[in-house]
Length: 139
Image (cartoon, rainbow, N blue to C red; front, side):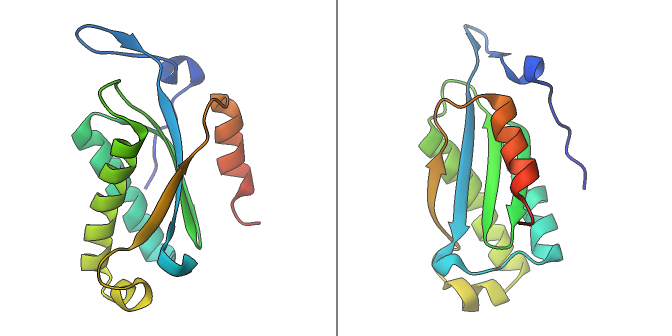
């Protein structure tokens, strides 16, 4: 599945009825116990679920990558969303549906939750984050 990469000019701002904004969050999270859960099928399903969740919530998925034991998501969001809300939306949506589609994840990570904590990059330039996500995978 291919995801559209948005150019820096496109990702730098968005609009709502009352405001223009430039908000982007880089979130990284890992499976419980840092399990290496991302096989080809789980990887593809996770990216698809992230794309669907962002579309449904009005978020723009700027970049997404997985390694065998973590997920990087770079997303642009309207000001009504805090980074913790974005992380909660994405993690809960993917956790629920991944555990339904792949029952073996319940054995690996436990029945209650699939993910642990999320982290944010803060005020780092968009291109640096994109470069990091695309270049660090597979090392």
